[in-house]
Length: 228
Ligand code: CA
Image (tube, rainbow, N blue to C red; front, side, top):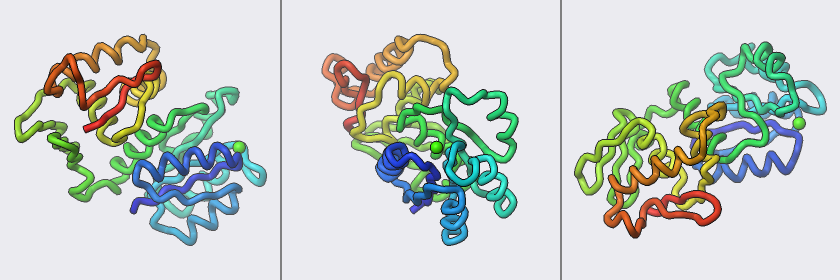
């Protein structure tokens, strides 16, 4: 199982991350201080990605990042930043990190970032992770194709990204905001309606009966859920 270290001193946030990482199929290793994080890493050299909070009791997350980078170039590093911190300072000190996520973040967003990092660092190279197989659907994440009952379905890049998000989070209710930030990026300033427009098109392509969708179901007042 792929290991992810979560360094966060706030227990509520850490538990929230652990639950979501576990649900996404990762083994979560916890640390509450910078020193604990470095100890856990020394014990588990196969950790693929580390999520580092910045405000910590013993040292700041940037220092932890520097110390990790001093011994490993391979590991993926995601910084957790608070909105109140000046982004200039954060990005200026980010040289050793691969990505950052701003609090508050959605589970789908964080998981998508971790998945992306594992792909980038080459930790996602086994064949099983290249095929997402659910119900009648087979998604090949290497060549970005989708088949339903063996028949190729042509998707736009955005439709593909939405469907992949669903297939990576089966049964999980995803809000329009989750989908927007995971697919369009968290800086995207557009309207949530773009999500509905794409879901409508996606349903026409993949549902047996578009007026009674069973794969992408509506979660009233929230968003959508994948139920293949
Ligand atoms: Ca903190």
